[in-house]
Image 1 (cartoon, one colour):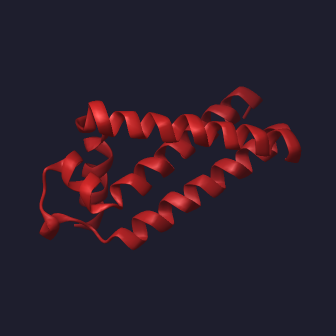
Image 2: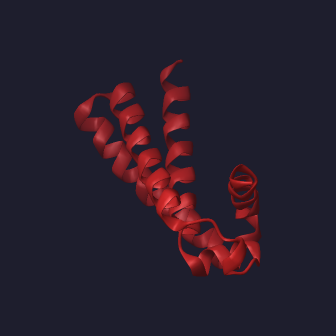
Length: 108
């Protein structure tokens, strides 16, 4: 995998991680899916998976750019992807339905 692909994959992992962290919260889950509490998956696995995806993104950034610059890129990526998820939840929460649908399908 070349450097650009590695950086893109790391940014995608960070975006998915923040999406899972957001869906781990009851309010965001209901906003995105419209489902009540009875259809919600437990939040602890979502939070753990979100944190693991962030750690994997950090590892890819460090692998691609080295420890010092990779950590800096990871921090910048976390800022950008967190803002992306926050703005998506604000203006178009339905854009995250595919992630919630995949999580509900995996549970069943």
